[in-house]
Image 1 (tube, rainbow, N blue to C red):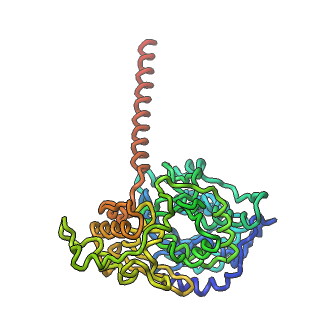
Image 2: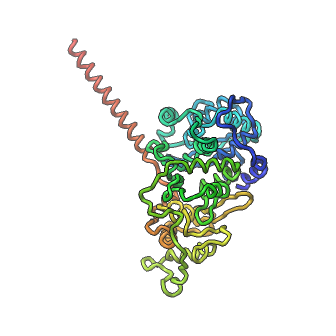
Image 3: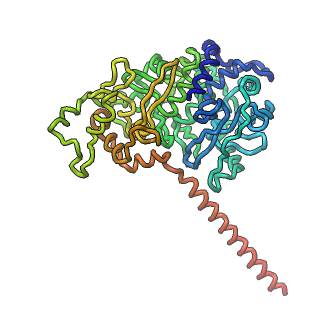
Length: 475
């Protein structure tokens, strides 16, 4: 994290007033502009996935836990031995927009090439120029992705691409403003918002019938960002949205953690005001998508202040009646109140957020509260770090809460400060602790292949019997 922050401190300052290319340049310059490519790499958040903790920028090696197994990001520095230094512009284009490596092997869509397919020829040339000329080569290969059978057969992605890869650069909508088209180009392409915020179907494809309406990321949940006033962000103003993207927090409503915290730190906070405004204009123009599980009020308006210390002082026992363990209220007072306040009101400057009128505690599911307690929050924007320690998600955490304790604490917080009907079990915590639920696709694909093999054997047997019968009749 320190190396990434230093990297951005020395390289991104000059980018504040630079915008990306026009959506439809007249003719792409094959030489490319490295400076504009650098801005596009920042907007595309390449460093977040292609830099391992304490690793060198773009050298890969980051372990990404997916429903199909662990995938490792690759080295995309211009190293000839470990990176993409031997890639031509055409090779680079195939990898970024079509998901095909130089050696012809298919990439997995954990690399969001389905979104990058919307990038223009000029932007691809600029990106290529930046990575080849301005990124320092790192001659070190990281771990190799080895998914379980049959997902390790990369050729199968060719058929997936035939079904779900757009394969065409963004086409401007002549009925919309230039700002709207700019926002659409960024959201659908470079910033690839749908990669996280759009639910995945059975084959792990984005559900384009309900774009940006929320999706599980295994440990965290990317919420609904359509303009629905209850389920989405329809209650936010343009200024609210741009402020959140720029800083990662919106006082009294939301704070960015997990992958969104990384996106703010490494990408959105370095983008121009014009681009952030364009994203806001586009997002707020989309069709609202409502979640039937939501109540009449949004997740940003749930809960109220309450000080549980009064109940704990001689009225309600510190220990739970059932198993003689610390109650949720006691866990809150012992681990949370020192920062968030005895009434969970947060600090006056907003550094420590309120736990009521908070998107995490007002959500209709417990994923993000569990992940926040487990893994904490750490993001640095404009030299200011927002930090909350984790409570058991990492071996080095000072306080190690077990699954039952986190479940009791989460239920207390939801009931007292957020959406009281949300229930968290120790099994829920254990599932998020191990990276989230696995996809049934792996098992079903194996069953399907086994069934196919059996069917082929049966057909071969039938053909053999028929031919043998005909031979006997001829004799």
